Length: 101
Image (tube, rainbow, N blue to C red; front, side, top):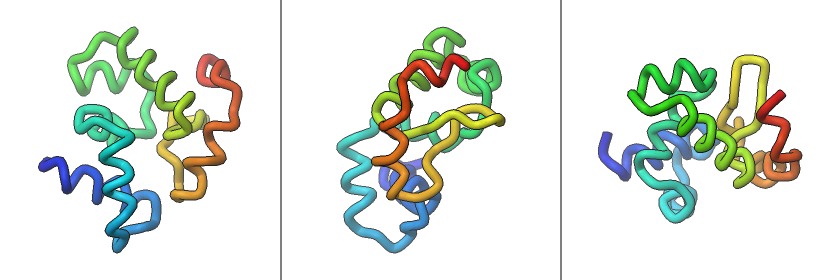
């Protein structure tokens, strides 16, 4: 997927499909490879590792980083991209260790 499309897809998942600004912000916050990983959520680290070919330890580190940056939050199905752009702020208020639970 082209970089511009990746960020538009994330903006769409954040309920902002027509935003011209949000994809530009996301481009500053998230690398294209990280954006692709975010689009695979929700999923457990083992599943993501298998799908991406990355080591599971690296996937866990990425997910922890995403949590600390407020991009994802833990759910029963595994880490989840924020449901709405307003949750990007709210998600970062969680304790970083909550991903381990």
